[in-house]
Image (tube, rainbow, N blue to C red; front, side, top):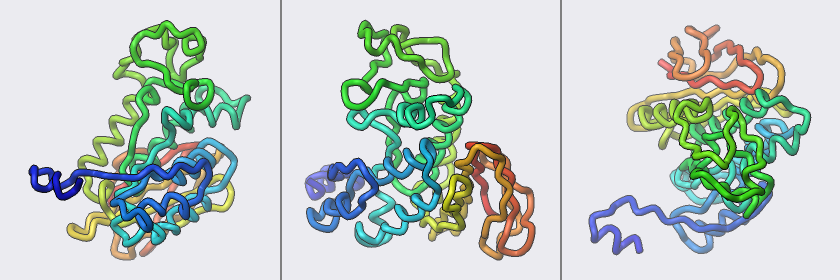
Length: 285
């Protein structure tokens, strides 16, 4: 297939295997690249980790465990090609899991958790796959058929009684609102990914993380240009104030999203203040 694509002038024909696992087990998904010798494999462990860290009670150390398993897939470039997702038609939507884990949470909290999960999707390593409707606040009632709402006006009762996030609309309406808060957040993050090569294919370096809900910070570094983008996440319900390790040569941080400190606190460190379920994306200079 790859040879035929190349002959037809398609050099980046992306092929990946589907080795489904509902938990964080890269030893299963890595069979696609290690055993079947496919170029890539859908990153189900990413889905599991983000679901449980941004939409559950596990600490960011689960993300560290996930990304530390990257060598199982092959060389460093393979992990950058893994399709990542926060929810899909089979496994259900991220917002459904967050609501299930925190049934008493306000709509504002669920919106923030959903945006946080997708900020991880669009800034961390891998090839992000967005599930249509997530940007319109779709939640779903569960997995498989219960997560397949149509963005066009639906006549399906089990969908139309759902309470969508961030809107008074229902799935009985046509949902293509480009002013929805989640749509605008995803759009901004997607534009950053397009603009900064480090977010697309830069090597990922874990800077620091907490073992309880709280801090997770990484750098994405493009080897060719030296461009470095720092992403800092707060998975807790409290304002986070913490120092984050940086390249000692970094002296200035330019805010791309959220709030970044203008300057480093000391060589190799910057002090961040991140709102509950918030994040910051910064260009290191």
